[in-house]
Picture (cartoon, rainbow, N blue to C red):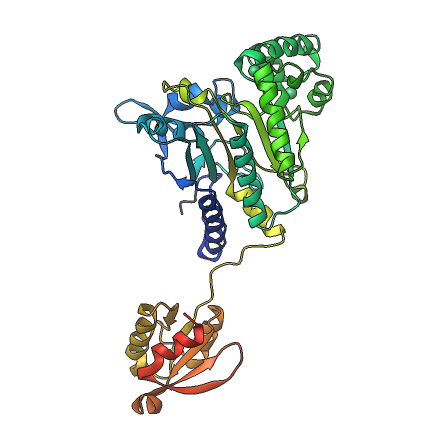
Length: 420
Ligand SMILES: [Zn+2]
Ligand SMILES: [Zn+2]
Protein backbone atom coordinates (compact mmCIF):
# COMPACT_ATOMS: atom_id res chain seq x y z
CA UNK A 1 0.00 0.00 0.00
CA UNK A 2 1.38 3.41 -0.97
CA UNK A 3 1.02 6.04 1.73
CA UNK A 4 1.02 9.83 1.35
CA UNK A 5 4.38 11.62 1.60
CA UNK A 6 5.52 12.81 5.03
CA UNK A 7 4.21 16.24 5.91
CA UNK A 8 1.13 16.00 3.71
CA UNK A 9 -2.48 15.40 4.71
CA UNK A 10 -5.60 13.99 3.15
CA UNK A 11 -8.44 16.36 3.85
CA UNK A 12 -11.40 14.01 4.10
CA UNK A 13 -15.03 14.92 3.38
CA UNK A 14 -15.81 15.01 7.11
CA UNK A 15 -13.35 17.90 7.43
CA UNK A 16 -13.50 19.78 4.14
CA UNK A 17 -16.77 21.47 5.11
CA UNK A 18 -14.85 23.37 7.80
CA UNK A 19 -12.16 24.36 5.32
CA UNK A 20 -14.78 25.70 2.95
CA UNK A 21 -16.37 27.74 5.74
CA UNK A 22 -13.06 29.33 6.66
CA UNK A 23 -12.16 29.96 3.02
CA UNK A 24 -15.55 31.57 2.47
CA UNK A 25 -14.92 33.99 5.34
CA UNK A 26 -11.47 34.81 3.91
CA UNK A 27 -12.99 35.52 0.50
CA UNK A 28 -15.93 37.51 1.89
CA UNK A 29 -13.79 39.75 4.07
CA UNK A 30 -11.22 40.26 1.27
CA UNK A 31 -13.94 41.26 -1.14
CA UNK A 32 -15.43 43.70 1.37
CA UNK A 33 -12.01 45.40 1.36
CA UNK A 34 -12.05 45.33 -2.46
CA UNK A 35 -9.30 42.72 -2.86
CA UNK A 36 -9.76 40.38 -5.85
CA UNK A 37 -8.42 36.89 -6.19
CA UNK A 38 -5.24 36.19 -8.15
CA UNK A 39 -4.16 32.66 -9.12
CA UNK A 40 -0.51 32.08 -9.95
CA UNK A 41 1.24 28.78 -10.86
CA UNK A 42 2.09 26.20 -8.21
CA UNK A 43 5.68 26.07 -9.52
CA UNK A 44 7.92 28.91 -10.61
CA UNK A 45 11.49 29.39 -11.79
CA UNK A 46 13.75 28.82 -8.78
CA UNK A 47 15.40 32.19 -9.28
CA UNK A 48 12.15 33.97 -8.39
CA UNK A 49 12.57 32.86 -4.78
CA UNK A 50 16.36 33.01 -4.44
CA UNK A 51 16.28 36.63 -5.67
CA UNK A 52 13.47 37.81 -3.41
CA UNK A 53 13.09 35.60 -0.35
CA UNK A 54 16.87 35.70 0.08
CA UNK A 55 19.81 33.32 -0.26
CA UNK A 56 20.47 33.18 3.48
CA UNK A 57 16.91 32.51 4.61
CA UNK A 58 15.83 29.12 5.95
CA UNK A 59 13.34 28.86 3.12
CA UNK A 60 15.94 29.12 0.38
CA UNK A 61 18.74 27.38 2.27
CA UNK A 62 16.91 24.25 3.29
CA UNK A 63 13.18 24.23 2.70
CA UNK A 64 12.47 24.51 -1.01
CA UNK A 65 11.20 21.72 -3.21
CA UNK A 66 13.47 22.39 -6.16
CA UNK A 67 13.74 20.10 -9.16
CA UNK A 68 14.88 20.06 -12.74
CA UNK A 69 12.17 19.55 -15.36
CA UNK A 70 12.80 17.36 -18.40
CA UNK A 71 14.35 20.26 -20.28
CA UNK A 72 16.79 20.91 -17.44
CA UNK A 73 15.16 24.08 -16.06
CA UNK A 74 15.35 24.59 -12.31
CA UNK A 75 11.81 24.89 -10.96
CA UNK A 76 10.54 25.24 -7.40
CA UNK A 77 7.18 24.45 -5.83
CA UNK A 78 6.19 27.84 -4.46
CA UNK A 79 7.16 28.18 -0.77
CA UNK A 80 5.26 31.47 -0.39
CA UNK A 81 2.91 33.70 -2.34
CA UNK A 82 4.25 37.25 -2.42
CA UNK A 83 7.11 36.80 -4.91
CA UNK A 84 4.78 35.08 -7.42
CA UNK A 85 2.31 37.98 -7.05
CA UNK A 86 5.15 40.44 -7.68
CA UNK A 87 6.21 38.49 -10.74
CA UNK A 88 2.66 38.34 -12.09
CA UNK A 89 2.26 42.09 -11.47
CA UNK A 90 5.28 42.79 -13.68
CA UNK A 91 4.73 40.10 -16.29
CA UNK A 92 1.11 41.12 -16.93
CA UNK A 93 1.85 44.84 -16.93
CA UNK A 94 -0.49 45.48 -13.99
CA UNK A 95 1.76 48.42 -12.99
CA UNK A 96 0.56 50.36 -16.02
CA UNK A 97 -3.11 50.00 -15.03
CA UNK A 98 -4.98 51.74 -12.21
CA UNK A 99 -3.17 51.66 -8.86
CA UNK A 100 -3.14 50.33 -6.26
CA UNK A 101 -3.58 46.70 -7.28
CA UNK A 102 -5.24 44.81 -4.44
CA UNK A 103 -5.21 41.03 -4.64
CA UNK A 104 -5.59 37.96 -2.46
CA UNK A 105 -4.73 34.32 -3.00
CA UNK A 106 -5.57 31.00 -1.39
CA UNK A 107 -3.59 27.94 -2.35
CA UNK A 108 -1.05 25.28 -1.46
CA UNK A 109 2.57 26.19 -0.66
CA UNK A 110 5.46 23.79 -0.10
CA UNK A 111 8.30 23.84 2.40
CA UNK A 112 10.55 21.00 3.47
CA UNK A 113 10.15 21.57 7.20
CA UNK A 114 9.98 19.29 10.20
CA UNK A 115 6.28 18.39 10.37
CA UNK A 116 4.59 19.27 13.69
CA UNK A 117 1.19 20.28 15.01
CA UNK A 118 -0.37 22.62 12.47
CA UNK A 119 2.73 22.61 10.28
CA UNK A 120 2.97 20.58 7.11
CA UNK A 121 5.25 20.34 4.09
CA UNK A 122 2.28 21.03 1.89
CA UNK A 123 0.15 23.73 3.47
CA UNK A 124 -2.51 26.13 2.38
CA UNK A 125 -1.86 29.82 2.61
CA UNK A 126 -4.10 32.83 2.27
CA UNK A 127 -2.39 36.12 1.51
CA UNK A 128 -3.40 39.66 0.64
CA UNK A 129 -1.15 42.10 -1.23
CA UNK A 130 -1.51 45.78 -2.03
CA UNK A 131 0.87 47.04 -4.72
CA UNK A 132 1.42 50.57 -5.96
CA UNK A 133 1.29 52.80 -2.88
CA UNK A 134 3.85 53.61 -0.21
CA UNK A 135 1.35 55.44 1.99
CA UNK A 136 1.16 54.28 5.61
CA UNK A 137 -2.62 54.32 5.08
CA UNK A 138 -2.07 51.15 3.06
CA UNK A 139 -0.07 49.49 5.84
CA UNK A 140 -2.97 50.37 8.13
CA UNK A 141 -5.57 49.00 5.72
CA UNK A 142 -3.73 45.72 5.33
CA UNK A 143 -3.37 45.38 9.11
CA UNK A 144 -7.05 46.20 9.53
CA UNK A 145 -7.92 43.52 6.96
CA UNK A 146 -5.80 40.98 8.85
CA UNK A 147 -7.47 41.77 12.16
CA UNK A 148 -10.95 41.83 10.63
CA UNK A 149 -10.35 38.35 9.21
CA UNK A 150 -9.48 37.15 12.72
CA UNK A 151 -12.59 38.82 14.16
CA UNK A 152 -14.84 37.36 11.48
CA UNK A 153 -13.52 33.92 12.37
CA UNK A 154 -14.24 34.41 16.07
CA UNK A 155 -10.62 35.12 17.03
CA UNK A 156 -11.17 38.24 19.06
CA UNK A 157 -8.65 39.47 21.59
CA UNK A 158 -5.77 39.18 19.18
CA UNK A 159 -2.67 41.26 19.83
CA UNK A 160 -0.94 43.24 17.13
CA UNK A 161 2.86 43.32 17.18
CA UNK A 162 4.55 45.98 15.15
CA UNK A 163 8.08 46.87 14.17
CA UNK A 164 9.99 48.68 11.46
CA UNK A 165 13.04 47.13 9.84
CA UNK A 166 13.84 50.31 7.93
CA UNK A 167 14.99 50.60 4.36
CA UNK A 168 18.24 49.40 2.73
CA UNK A 169 19.83 52.77 3.56
CA UNK A 170 19.20 52.94 7.31
CA UNK A 171 19.41 49.18 7.73
CA UNK A 172 23.07 49.36 6.73
CA UNK A 173 23.93 51.42 9.82
CA UNK A 174 21.94 49.07 12.00
CA UNK A 175 23.55 46.04 10.45
CA UNK A 176 26.95 47.40 11.39
CA UNK A 177 25.94 48.09 14.98
CA UNK A 178 24.32 44.68 15.30
CA UNK A 179 27.30 42.87 13.77
CA UNK A 180 29.58 44.63 16.24
CA UNK A 181 27.36 43.71 19.20
CA UNK A 182 26.92 40.09 18.13
CA UNK A 183 30.55 39.73 17.06
CA UNK A 184 31.67 40.48 20.61
CA UNK A 185 29.40 37.67 21.86
CA UNK A 186 29.80 35.30 18.94
CA UNK A 187 31.15 32.34 20.90
CA UNK A 188 27.95 32.21 23.00
CA UNK A 189 25.60 32.16 20.00
CA UNK A 190 24.11 28.93 18.64
CA UNK A 191 25.78 27.30 15.67
CA UNK A 192 23.27 28.68 13.14
CA UNK A 193 23.65 32.21 14.47
CA UNK A 194 27.45 32.10 14.42
CA UNK A 195 27.13 31.44 10.72
CA UNK A 196 24.50 34.16 10.32
CA UNK A 197 26.53 36.94 12.00
CA UNK A 198 28.86 37.24 9.02
CA UNK A 199 26.26 36.74 6.28
CA UNK A 200 23.04 38.25 7.53
CA UNK A 201 23.05 39.36 11.19
CA UNK A 202 19.40 40.44 11.07
CA UNK A 203 18.50 36.79 10.78
CA UNK A 204 19.87 36.25 14.30
CA UNK A 205 16.96 38.35 15.61
CA UNK A 206 14.68 35.51 14.52
CA UNK A 207 16.49 32.80 16.50
CA UNK A 208 14.40 30.79 18.95
CA UNK A 209 17.41 29.50 20.92
CA UNK A 210 17.21 30.65 24.55
CA UNK A 211 20.84 31.69 24.90
CA UNK A 212 20.59 33.67 21.68
CA UNK A 213 17.37 35.29 22.91
CA UNK A 214 19.07 36.35 26.14
CA UNK A 215 21.95 37.90 24.20
CA UNK A 216 19.50 39.69 21.91
CA UNK A 217 17.70 41.30 24.84
CA UNK A 218 20.58 43.77 25.09
CA UNK A 219 21.12 44.19 21.33
CA UNK A 220 20.71 47.56 19.62
CA UNK A 221 17.22 48.22 18.25
CA UNK A 222 16.50 48.99 14.60
CA UNK A 223 14.09 51.68 15.74
CA UNK A 224 17.04 53.77 16.94
CA UNK A 225 18.62 53.65 13.49
CA UNK A 226 15.65 54.54 11.26
CA UNK A 227 16.28 57.28 8.71
CA UNK A 228 13.94 60.29 8.66
CA UNK A 229 11.66 58.79 5.99
CA UNK A 230 11.36 55.42 7.73
CA UNK A 231 10.86 57.02 11.12
CA UNK A 232 8.09 59.24 9.82
CA UNK A 233 6.39 56.31 8.10
CA UNK A 234 6.45 54.28 11.31
CA UNK A 235 5.16 57.13 13.46
CA UNK A 236 2.36 57.98 11.03
CA UNK A 237 1.26 54.34 10.90
CA UNK A 238 1.17 54.27 14.70
CA UNK A 239 -1.04 57.39 14.74
CA UNK A 240 -3.42 55.97 12.14
CA UNK A 241 -3.79 52.69 14.04
CA UNK A 242 -4.40 54.51 17.31
CA UNK A 243 -6.93 56.72 15.54
CA UNK A 244 -8.75 53.58 14.32
CA UNK A 245 -8.90 52.36 17.90
CA UNK A 246 -6.37 49.60 17.35
CA UNK A 247 -3.86 48.96 20.08
CA UNK A 248 -0.48 47.52 19.21
CA UNK A 249 2.80 46.59 20.80
CA UNK A 250 6.10 47.73 19.37
CA UNK A 251 8.26 44.63 19.24
CA UNK A 252 11.88 45.31 18.20
CA UNK A 253 12.61 41.57 18.01
CA UNK A 254 10.05 41.18 15.23
CA UNK A 255 11.76 40.59 11.90
CA UNK A 256 10.15 38.50 9.23
CA UNK A 257 12.10 35.57 7.82
CA UNK A 258 12.13 36.95 4.28
CA UNK A 259 14.64 39.38 2.84
CA UNK A 260 12.28 41.53 0.81
CA UNK A 261 10.59 43.30 3.71
CA UNK A 262 11.17 47.02 4.25
CA UNK A 263 9.83 49.34 6.91
CA UNK A 264 6.68 47.91 8.50
CA UNK A 265 6.60 44.33 9.74
CA UNK A 266 3.74 43.01 11.84
CA UNK A 267 2.33 39.89 13.39
CA UNK A 268 -1.09 39.16 14.79
CA UNK A 269 -0.96 36.83 17.75
CA UNK A 270 -3.71 34.97 19.48
CA UNK A 271 -2.59 34.06 23.02
CA UNK A 272 -4.89 31.01 23.53
CA UNK A 273 -2.77 29.21 20.92
CA UNK A 274 0.03 28.85 23.46
CA UNK A 275 3.78 29.13 22.98
CA UNK A 276 3.67 29.70 19.23
CA UNK A 277 0.78 32.09 19.14
CA UNK A 278 1.46 34.04 15.94
CA UNK A 279 -1.32 33.31 13.48
CA UNK A 280 -0.39 35.68 10.71
CA UNK A 281 2.33 38.04 9.70
CA UNK A 282 3.26 40.45 7.01
CA UNK A 283 4.83 43.72 6.15
CA UNK A 284 5.92 46.19 3.54
CA UNK A 285 8.15 45.14 0.65
CA UNK A 286 9.03 48.25 -1.30
CA UNK A 287 12.03 46.65 -3.02
CA UNK A 288 10.43 43.43 -4.24
CA UNK A 289 9.06 44.45 -7.63
CA UNK A 290 12.25 46.25 -8.56
CA UNK A 291 14.37 43.28 -7.43
CA UNK A 292 12.41 41.22 -9.93
CA UNK A 293 13.34 43.53 -12.77
CA UNK A 294 10.15 45.61 -12.68
CA UNK A 295 9.68 49.33 -12.02
CA UNK A 296 10.17 50.67 -8.51
CA UNK A 297 6.74 49.90 -7.06
CA UNK A 298 6.05 49.64 -3.32
CA UNK A 299 3.86 46.99 -1.77
CA UNK A 300 2.49 45.74 1.53
CA UNK A 301 0.73 42.52 2.50
CA UNK A 302 0.45 39.58 4.83
CA UNK A 303 -0.11 35.83 4.77
CA UNK A 304 -1.67 33.25 7.02
CA UNK A 305 -1.36 29.47 7.06
CA UNK A 306 -4.80 27.90 7.03
CA UNK A 307 -3.83 24.79 9.03
CA UNK A 308 -2.79 26.86 12.02
CA UNK A 309 -5.63 29.30 11.48
CA UNK A 310 -8.12 26.43 11.55
CA UNK A 311 -6.52 25.08 14.74
CA UNK A 312 -7.07 28.48 16.31
CA UNK A 313 -10.58 28.89 14.95
CA UNK A 314 -11.60 25.53 16.43
CA UNK A 315 -10.61 26.87 19.85
CA UNK A 316 -12.21 30.27 19.27
CA UNK A 317 -15.66 31.73 19.82
CA UNK A 318 -17.00 30.76 16.44
CA UNK A 319 -15.72 27.27 15.55
CA UNK A 320 -16.57 26.43 11.95
CA UNK A 321 -19.42 24.00 11.48
CA UNK A 322 -18.88 21.28 8.91
CA UNK A 323 -21.08 20.73 5.92
CA UNK A 324 -24.56 22.14 5.84
CA UNK A 325 -27.32 19.71 6.71
CA UNK A 326 -29.12 17.75 4.05
CA UNK A 327 -32.61 19.15 3.42
CA UNK A 328 -34.22 15.91 2.48
CA UNK A 329 -33.46 12.19 2.37
CA UNK A 330 -35.83 10.09 0.27
CA UNK A 331 -36.52 6.60 1.69
CA UNK A 332 -38.51 3.77 0.15
CA UNK A 333 -40.19 0.72 1.62
CA UNK A 334 -39.38 -1.77 -1.14
CA UNK A 335 -36.94 -1.98 -4.05
CA UNK A 336 -39.56 -1.40 -6.74
CA UNK A 337 -39.73 2.22 -5.53
CA UNK A 338 -35.97 2.92 -5.76
CA UNK A 339 -36.38 4.55 -9.15
CA UNK A 340 -39.13 6.86 -7.82
CA UNK A 341 -36.82 7.83 -4.95
CA UNK A 342 -34.08 8.83 -7.39
CA UNK A 343 -36.61 10.75 -9.43
CA UNK A 344 -37.95 12.70 -6.43
CA UNK A 345 -34.44 13.39 -5.10
CA UNK A 346 -33.43 14.75 -8.50
CA UNK A 347 -36.52 16.96 -8.71
CA UNK A 348 -35.64 18.45 -5.32
CA UNK A 349 -31.98 18.92 -6.30
CA UNK A 350 -32.98 20.76 -9.47
CA UNK A 351 -35.18 22.97 -7.30
CA UNK A 352 -32.13 24.01 -5.26
CA UNK A 353 -32.50 21.69 -2.26
CA UNK A 354 -29.85 19.41 -0.82
CA UNK A 355 -31.32 15.96 -1.35
CA UNK A 356 -30.23 12.35 -1.44
CA UNK A 357 -31.74 8.87 -1.39
CA UNK A 358 -30.68 5.37 -0.47
CA UNK A 359 -28.45 3.84 -3.11
CA UNK A 360 -27.77 0.49 -1.43
CA UNK A 361 -31.27 -1.01 -1.15
CA UNK A 362 -31.21 -1.00 2.66
CA UNK A 363 -34.09 -1.68 5.03
CA UNK A 364 -36.32 1.31 5.85
CA UNK A 365 -34.87 1.38 9.36
CA UNK A 366 -31.32 1.55 7.97
CA UNK A 367 -32.41 4.27 5.52
CA UNK A 368 -33.79 6.39 8.39
CA UNK A 369 -30.49 5.93 10.17
CA UNK A 370 -28.70 7.13 7.06
CA UNK A 371 -30.99 10.19 6.98
CA UNK A 372 -29.95 11.01 10.57
CA UNK A 373 -26.30 10.51 9.72
CA UNK A 374 -26.64 13.20 7.03
CA UNK A 375 -28.54 15.37 9.53
CA UNK A 376 -31.41 15.57 7.06
CA UNK A 377 -34.14 17.98 8.11
CA UNK A 378 -36.84 15.90 6.47
CA UNK A 379 -37.30 12.33 5.31
CA UNK A 380 -39.67 11.52 2.47
CA UNK A 381 -40.93 7.94 2.77
CA UNK A 382 -42.30 6.14 -0.27
CA UNK A 383 -44.60 3.18 0.42
CA UNK A 384 -46.35 1.08 -2.29
CA UNK A 385 -49.89 1.90 -1.14
CA UNK A 386 -49.23 5.64 -0.75
CA UNK A 387 -47.33 5.89 -4.01
CA UNK A 388 -50.30 4.25 -5.77
CA UNK A 389 -52.47 7.06 -4.30
CA UNK A 390 -49.95 9.69 -5.50
CA UNK A 391 -48.76 10.66 -2.01
CA UNK A 392 -45.72 10.14 0.22
CA UNK A 393 -45.05 10.64 3.91
CA UNK A 394 -42.93 13.60 4.91
CA UNK A 395 -41.35 13.33 8.34
CA UNK A 396 -39.64 16.13 10.22
CA UNK A 397 -36.45 14.62 11.59
CA UNK A 398 -36.14 17.40 14.17
CA UNK A 399 -39.71 17.61 15.42
CA UNK A 400 -40.92 14.06 14.82
CA UNK A 401 -44.25 14.97 13.12
CA UNK A 402 -45.21 13.38 9.85
CA UNK A 403 -47.88 13.98 7.25
CA UNK A 404 -48.87 12.97 3.78
CA UNK A 405 -47.94 15.19 0.87
CA UNK A 406 -49.03 14.92 -2.77
CA UNK A 407 -46.07 13.70 -4.86
CA UNK A 408 -46.94 16.34 -7.45
CA UNK A 409 -46.60 19.06 -4.81
CA UNK A 410 -43.48 17.60 -3.17
CA UNK A 411 -41.11 20.17 -4.67
CA UNK A 412 -43.16 23.19 -3.53
CA UNK A 413 -43.82 21.61 -0.14
CA UNK A 414 -40.15 20.91 0.53
CA UNK A 415 -39.16 24.34 -0.75
CA UNK A 416 -41.51 26.04 1.66
CA UNK A 417 -40.48 23.78 4.54
CA UNK A 418 -36.82 24.51 3.89
CA UNK A 419 -37.50 28.14 2.87
CA UNK A 420 -35.41 28.26 -0.26
ZN1 LIG B 1 15.22 54.13 6.07
ZN1 LIG C 1 20.72 31.32 17.56
